[in-house]
Every structure is written in C-alpha cells, then in structure tokens.
Length: 234
Image (tube, rainbow, N blue to C red; front, side):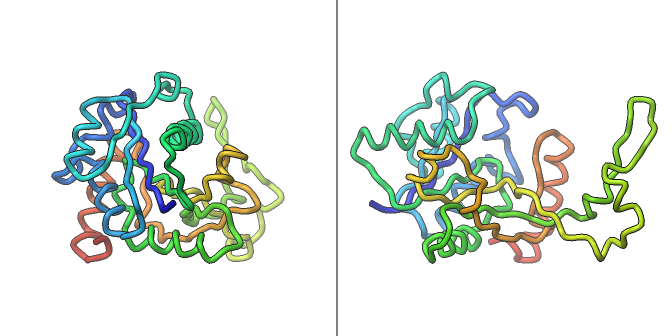
C-alpha cells in the first residue's frame, strides 16, 4: 500500500507536436510535473503512463518510473484520462501493487507545485471526499456571458440576468487542469472525477493556464517565469 502519482503522457499530441516533452523554460515540460511530484514528498511511486519510447526515456531520466508502455487502445485520440488511469491501476494490480491514494498529474502542468499536491493529499486523507480537484474562479460572471451567431450578431446566454449587478451573481469555477487526487476504488467504480464526493481546491487564476496551442504555450512561459522570479512557484 502507499500513494501513487500517475502522469499520463502519450506521444501522439496533435495541436502541439511532441507536447509532453517540448522544452518549457529550459526543461522538457514533463520534467516540471515530475519535479513537483518529488517535491511534494507524497508519493511511494511516480509513474509515467506513455506509449512512446522517447517520452519514457525522458521521464526516466528525471526520476520517474515507466514499468510498461500504454496499450494502443488507451493511446488513441478517443481515450479518456479515466481510461488511462484504470488501465494503469489494473496492470499494477496484476503485479500485486495496490495503493491507498492516487494522484493523476498532467504532464503539461508546470504551474503545479509540491505544496499544492501535498495540500490536496491532506484534504483527501482528512476524509469526507473521494476526489480532490484544483479549481479556479472565472474572471467574469458566466451568467452575464454572450453568444455570437455566424453573422456576428450577439445576445446574452442568460438574458434574465441582463440587469443583475455582477457582484450579486454567484461565482463560478472551472477545472484548473493540473491534477486529481482520488481514492482508486472510487475511480474504478465510477470512471469519473466530478460528483458529490469531489472537493474543489481553489487556486489563484495567475497560477492556472490552459496549454492547447502555441499562443497558450508562450503565455504560460511568460507567466511561469514571473511567478518563479517572485518565488510563487518552487
């Protein structure tokens, strides 16, 4: 028994080729996730799930384990994160390896910190929840959001809130896209992270950045450099 970190990192990323090992501020981006996992001092094992020999080699060089390569069906564009985690847990159980708590840490999460991973683990082990997910608040109230038609015409998604003051609307949050702590039995049963047993661990918006294209990548590096210089990120 123990705690396991699984870092999914398939080789076939489309929008940013070789995304999971592309250099990010001088290191393959996956190295930042491996480093955060190590700095958390939470894990019995830090495992990278990949179908790609080069990614496996890079991950191992930074101290992660790659005990097996991912099967083709979980390396496709249609495989979900839950699919990958279930496969990994099943194959580990075949080897008689069992864990009390597991964290899925994305390979492209350079804003994840050891301190946040530790706090997420402590929240999970405190009881009352099966999953802990980092979330951040939307900058602008989503109930005042707009839709835009093909002809450029705009309208409110929720016109009933047209005259409601922003400060009177409830805050809304979104998944920070960095990591998920969970009880393995819960994921194996539900194949889901979000439900009534999920706790939202709030991150400040400056430490959250989607990285889906080259513009996102440049923005993330710019933000990360300034946060690191200010000692916000270890």
